[in-house]
Length: 346
Image 1 (tube, rainbow, N blue to C red):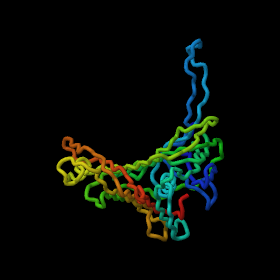
Image 2: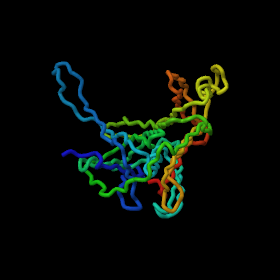
Image 3: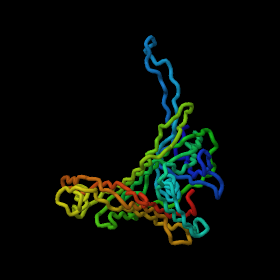
Image 4: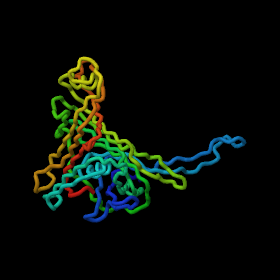
């Protein structure tokens, strides 16, 4: 008999120190977050090392040895606010949590403001991944979030994926018997608002977001078969929106350099701010009116030049990339605010 994928699970817990695994399946109040996922997994990335052909040898490969190994993969999910808070904290690096109330599911509400740090040393996660009913269970230590992608359509759920890279893995462990799974409310595109330049004049048909830390995942050292380091390099954040425009102002800003220009001008690219707010229809607890929500504010974006793209009798839509920038000021590249039913990020 085969083993179905739905019997598995994956759990995350923020580590206190590098190299020290913390069990996501620990008992309350020390447990982590187990996420419901749409697919994907971490996996060992390893190649054979084979010698080049030698004069006097056979035309066949004489043998091979196993090369060094890294652990990485992409996890796909519907966005839930307990899990997403942990992933964004690991990807960005700093969080300020402001909880109210005392009882989860009743009066407890957590507001978590997450911002990127300047340091290239990011928070690390301990991960437990159980595959199939009994196929294998891994524990990954020193796992970093390399990238997060989000997407949203008017007739779809808020969903995305996360790219993970871990330094070490241990197989054959006993899985958590009854994981505490984040089964909080899903969100849909009909309950979202996108603002560009502080206004919602144009019709935004869909959006996506791509964030990456550009972690090095191929740094090995002599005498070791595992990754030596996970150092974050230049980070990148892009917000994409499909827009039905009411005028050509945005195209002129992106291509000509000004909303009022009638031809290309010299100078810096036009900047604008972009924000997304999406909320659930379900209250965080039975005793509070607050709902689960996700908000990202990007204060400075360059509008990447794009084509108008008329076609036949199609309604004209702009597919616009907003590339986040950060001048040498204290303002964060972006600020994510998540409201959920937890007093802290796990």
